[in-house]
Image (cartoon, rainbow, N blue to C red; front, top):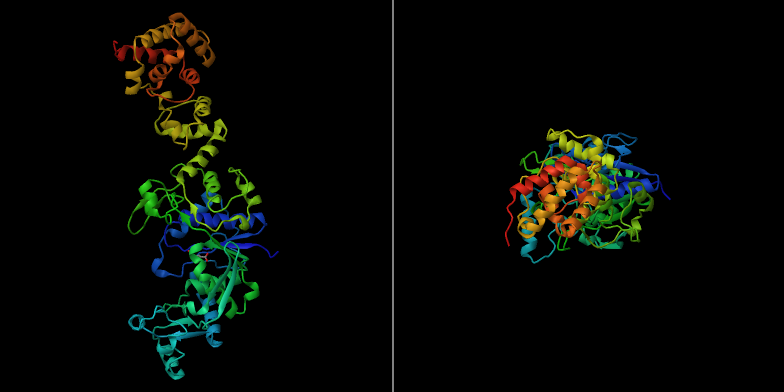
Length: 511
Ligand code: GLU
């Protein structure tokens, strides 16, 4: 097998979309699996769409995710530079070669002339209004103008582009590793611009030239690029690089959760979930978008989730470490159909990964939140809290958000529990319970439970009847982690204090 060299080739036109992150991930996994090289190339030839800060954003997002770059922007390597705007001369050279060999031509048509051509064709009833093998003969280019005029225009610096001379009626075939055989008639391909009037190459030329020069073995990219692939194949053929042509794999689209249409930022905003890996503020509009990182997603959970958007291992197993993914990943197991982006599944992954962490590590999340509140807490206590809460949380911040009662006694009580469960029996039980607690010398979850059962027999009320009310006196709410351990963590005196406070402050409904 050819040495695996893959590239992630984003354009710095804004924040990296989560779909771009998946593309980067699949490239990375293939590289790791085969001991290959992962390259980062920045495709910044479209000056109009360039967004300052986007490149840094891409680098930071990949670094956060743990997708390490072996070669390319930010890393260097044997095929430097890896930023296309710094490779202009290289592209010019190949465009020149195509011109000399009659496979490309100069075109001088103005925007207005192009518009007129489209209008003319439209009026003549033509469904195809492209600059192509059928229309180029009536346009202003080096195929129709005398050579002397062409040379004059070039030396005088008249704005011009270089177009590919696409042959008429030829089958262009390629094998996509995901989509299978793809065949397109060249008459459907227009004479694409290769070099723009600003001296910059277009995406197509730069992409093909770089993939060849950088010895790329596999082009793994989004499905939106599939229509461009035949053109790229033609370019490889024209440049005499067919043997070195990379293999193509066009990844399925990311769809909305209901499968109805492409996932967009607007959908994500509306549903209140992130679409970008890390926080992003658009430098032009100043619009702020919170990232997956800042929303509390763990990078390993997000990657596991993304891996399954279009790919599956063929088994029921859903949790895979990064290293495991790299071992079992294959392009053959990527599906053709669009992948539904279900944020609840991403949350499920986050829960699984949080749960699997040692309590001491989870404690750090809680301690960070506590520090912001200027609350001090021994790490052992924080670990104990996290241990009983970890089955219930989705994000690191939840340890604090859902566990405030460990540090503050409740100031409000769940009104439903008050109205349903607070009655004379409850008061009798809880009064007796707090009295009994005072007598315990060794207070922990077990002795608390034994005391509860003892009181139940004394007052002849089953403990199950007062459990929710007891929880409410301690936490204010109706649900939460294991109650006996909660009491142990809160401590004997505080438990008694909270029960007494509730007994004094909640009115008994007289039935
Ligand atoms: N620059 C293209 C993009 O932004 C890369 C497409 C490709 O990988 O060929 O998606």
